[in-house]
Length: 455
Ligand code: ATP
Ligand code: MG
Image 1 (tube, helix red, strand yellow):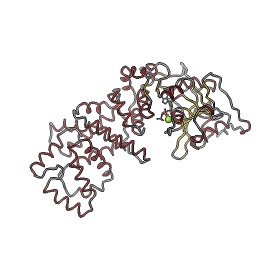
Image 2: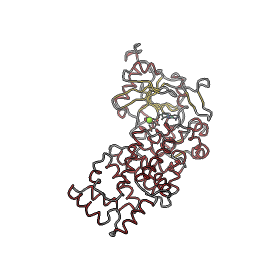
Image 3: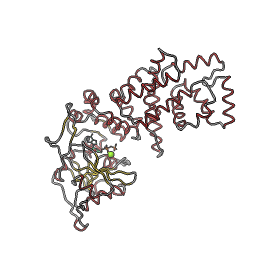
Image 4: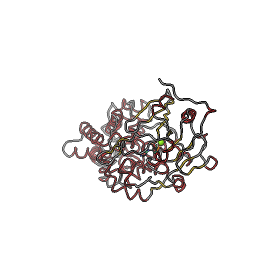
């Protein structure tokens, strides 16, 4: 391995870039080193000590200036990926479209990108105008060009480790003060280049609490169709970012408001429209609020749970369609679940380990509402029981039809083994799932439970 270019601290050059942007000296802004984690400082300092320019850039600068905790830290430098790779043993080069270096510190990853400049010769475009390759590196003097290829003004602020100043070439600081999310350049051109920016706009607006520039709002209806050309893998990544944004319920409202769900998850959108009582929107909102709360409390979340909630309305529609031709059984339920997943993965590339959990959670909903039987004693030990039960509780919170079944299961779950056995024995005679006491009525209600749509 070729040794990295190391220069001693005393030889450090605090190089200034030539392009004229606004330079805000350390004393005139609030971004303090003490809020930058040791991992990011390590990367910045080593690059700087080795004679390279090193800046924090993007969402982390935006969030730190707003007093928020950044999700991740990105570094921009004039060092080429191979040079960065040589400086850090704990790093690897990733990406084809954009070559980047990931420097890995345990569970933390610092993403290091080399300044890019637009170059008509190397920048590749697909037939729909999407940028598919962008690997021309820039020097420190071209940092302003690196700034303007970024998506939003508030995402193009650079924190210089050399002197603690912030560089702003696109008016990002003023927009940040105004809490305004504004595209760099012409929104139509920039959204055409990369339609995922539409989802990023809505996600960042919801997450950080920024309002969308009217020019973005105007561009959405004409640009949203371009999302159809984005790979299911990339769309899945974006949806995952929505789920873990910490403000997912808010982002969901914006996705609905600006009709972006129609393109991200067309089946979910259709199913929501078929639900006159709006239970499905309430279900998704409630589950997202719970997810946001869990993240706030630093608890773990399982994206499969949220995806199971998201596609539940679709499953109910599929189940209804199948039920018109065949009686409702475990098989028809499974059939509806499989159909739901096969259409879902056409748009979002949901990994198999997540679809397996989604199926488990759905299957449990079905088991919860069948006739009581002894196998329920083992059901509580099912590895996904807790997730399935939590799902049921949210259903009950938004749909009164599901309340009796949830109450029964809460009682069962909280009982000891003897009490569970008793409960099962008695339940066979009375009606567990519905509040009704007669067998006849129970049957009717049970049937209704399956054939009625929303949850
Ligand atoms: P988050 O808080 O979700 O991490 P972020 O703005 O940091 O938000 P990242 O995906 O981490 O988003 O990207 C880091 C930076 O890279 C962005 O702030 C932006 O400058 C640039 N960037 C990311 N995606 C795009 C894109 N599709 N087009 C242009 N620039 C982008
Ligand atoms: Mg980020």
